Image (cartoon, rainbow, N blue to C red; front, side, top):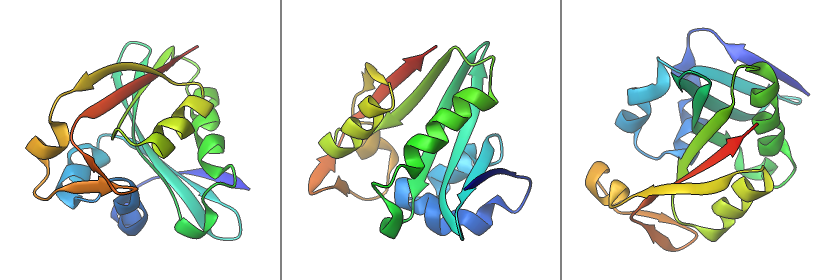
Length: 146
């Protein structure tokens, strides 16, 4: 297993990015200003994009694991890698939909709920968003602190 930073050509990973954020123009808002990492294990299994939001504060903007590789520890490995890779990171935020399976993943990675942005998905996406059959309305922000 190897995790590498992507320098340029980030859009080559759009199919995987779209698993976590299904509207390309929303991805475009953070893709170039963020750092992208891919996890390879006999091919690309997962990726993430992280942005620096302030002193010692980062935001995990996108994390996706290919469908056939989910629930095998790749996502958690990426999150743990980010904390190792950014020793100045004291607080990491992640925003997601209010879906029990996704929230459980982040809780297992050490995140705790921070705050919510009301109507984020209905106000910012051009279509209704669903995850595990649940309509996403509010953005749930979680944070992990060192």
